[in-house]
Image (cartoon, rainbow, N blue to C red; front, side):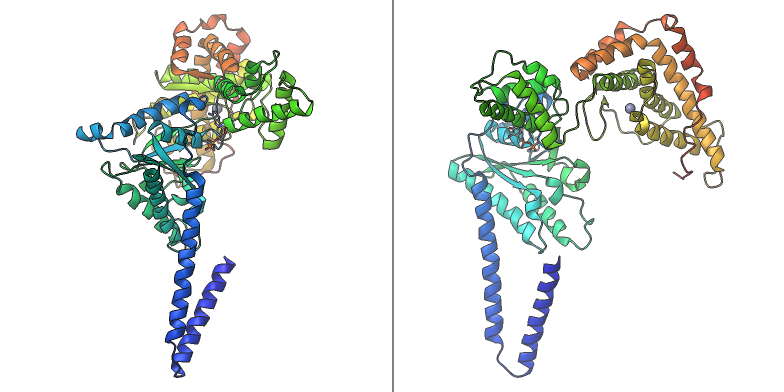
Length: 527
Ligand code: ADP
Ligand code: ZN
């Protein structure tokens, strides 16, 4: 920033000096000419340096990883390959009037294999591969970013031609840095020009180009992207890349120990179990660390304890959250199972998958089946959603005898929904004037709405206790359950509520009366 200011001051001073000299009757033309020459040379130098950088990064980097080298990520691989089949058959697709696929967005945490997948995509389509990172495009000087985007696409074409390939994959990592929402970086027209240039390049791509280009972007923050990027004809496909579950970790470990001598006592399954939350990159360095430990001891084979020690080392080095204890896992599993069962009972077919694995601050999640967008919400649906939300904490209480802080976000969301019910006139208060409604009245209505739903959720959980327990046990073992398996558990059926331990059933029935704290601590607001 300071640099910038000084450059402007210097430029201002120089222009001032030239004007002064001209005014004083001197011939200033040579000075102006010289200044222009220096400027042009500086620009050209900058560009040369840049194209060299792209070129050295990836020219001739084939053969790189293929899809077989990527462990886990089965749904990402499948989606990606399906999309790439269109690219491969683009001329057929064109005859059918299918819009050519120009861009694919890979979203997911760092180290999960997005770069690998992009390289595999290049291999799969027999394309050249050129990579850049979003941050390389952002500089203080207007126009540089846009120029770099042009340069990147040119490098891709040149590389493909020199390798005799018909296609090129342009991979842009951290695309949110260059593709963030326009107009949000005050005083930085630069961002806008850069992303505009990317849009221009992508809009100009055609199946008839002598080198067919596919742009693959990677980000962990798809929410920051300018909506123009995900419009049809640009990044049409979004492929989620996830933190691997146990099965996927085992696959990745096998891949990364393939070329390493393992002792007989090695149990990779056990290593996979002990590496909850590890990404592919973490597992790669685990395998490497284990080999180093073995070498230090003068062994010629990697033993189980080397792998175990390497787990610790990677956890410390990378600051990975420790795997939750068995007890914590049981709690998380029961919590998620509770959400899933109540949501499914109230809205059949709504659960797509359940997982206990870290994602965005949460330790587990239930993924809902995609539904049509809604613009208005019937009261019943809001209530069902509240019931599903509070079911997490209720299930914890049944399974572990107590609640935990893990449910704080659920409650926040439940309170938010309950307020919507009250403020849009759907509570027993009838139509209310949000502006003049006393805070305590609102708080009481919100709290009542939630405790009604807690009661409903409690009844469902009591009836389906066997399902909740079964699902939770399965999750502790496998970390993830797909919708189909969940359906089987649900169909296996609830057990009669009478066989519940009487204390639990009674506690749940009385729930409505004993809980009044929701919403009480929240300041009244308007929505
Ligand atoms: P990202 O682009 O998502 O940050 P990378 O593709 O750069 O992740 O992964 C970094 C390294 O981690 C890879 O070179 C590879 O060794 C390892 N890795 C990551 N994910 C996987 C995976 N799914 N299978 C095998 N190795 C992986
Ligand atoms: Zn929850």
